[in-house]
Length: 424
Length: 189
Image (cartoon, rainbow over the protein chains, first blue to last red):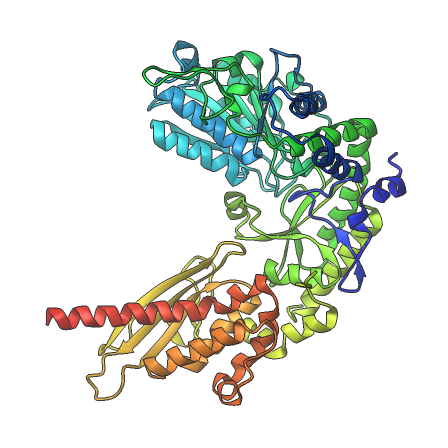
């Protein structure tokens, strides 16, 4: 088991009072808090090594470049991706949203004929299909919806069951011979449900479609092996896995990254540039990393990845499962409905709920007065809320530092909400 | 650091009884026309009732929390010899208790008032919401705002000011639209 006290001592931010109550942070699905080792790594980098990477011949530039590539390798190791020189499968981006936009834009560029013959495997045309789901975060839905509009492809979506789970068993019907891309979430940021991706990946590959997996909500909580999962692309951010903001990742199978045309153009992604003929672009990952990179942030993310591996993702998942069970007791509170699976199997500790008769904004304000941080709103996933007949909800989400006692505090506060707003 | 949240006591200050009550049964609200919605009580609908007035609507939306309202006004065109006035104001929508209560109080304040008076009240309410909890320090203005002064507590919280302003913004936008349409009709006549 995880040593709770030892973990919490690494997060000084948790040791404070908010509105006269001990802070209870249950908003890790929005962003996780950072352990001291991550904060120190960012600080130490700026204090000692700061320089641009992959350019310049001075000592600091060399140190920064080595640290940057080491950090990339640490992140790769966390998700079972390759990182040896010339075989890198992790592209550094400004975040998960940037990674998904990069990919959709690159597919669009391929559809315009850019990237030569090799890139035609990404090209879309009218009649082709892009498949997603009703459970997607807007950062998956919108880039691929735009791609459909730009290319004339049709956007289709997996439906959800009454607990909000993606109906993976319908893969053989939803994914057809016309499907070229399947962009789908591994874990919903609203329902916390883990998608049964095996039938989806199997069917997609059977028809020659590419699978893009949003792993933002799974990487911080579950053991992830992207090779074993057999997906083609994946995207996630560092700040939800206890790393800094401003950096995220696009995973791609090496062969696919090599064929993918660039989506963002500028310095450090080009080998030869001319005034009168097309540039010759670098190999991945540099081809997709135009401009000055978030060096300190990536180094922090590398420390976070190592920190997670040192604790062990299995142990983290087991610890958080106990917290999830604590949160699921919300379903027994009068007037509370859980939006998502009501039992702990195949879900993580992201638990969204509705309090009958009280708007989430009001619930959040009340809960905040008890020093408890939860998220309210649509969580950048409006279609899944519509599925439940709502526009917004309340969401409590776990991190490795949460305790069962904190879920007790939340339950106690939620149980008072309807009385306070006089709707009981 | 600034403290943008609230203690239990401050919470009570923000959610005053007037707000909670108004939010439960807000004035001027027309039930949404969708399956399962209760029938409009007193037969109130979004249909235009005053033939001599110029109707206009404005849709307001707060994407962070989903508060939304369509504000319908009917503005008299002055041909009755009296100043242009809001003869009717109703709205459809849903949202948090602050937005709902503010819409309700706004309707009570501007219904029947001249456009000039309504805009003046909107300005005063805006000042109140910009006061960061301090209030407007003007007894006349406070008296004019009546029940709307209970939103003083909300003005401390940047995340909630938008909720309180939603209805007022919609009132201003729809009245402005009605006045524009009025001018157009005059030009055409």
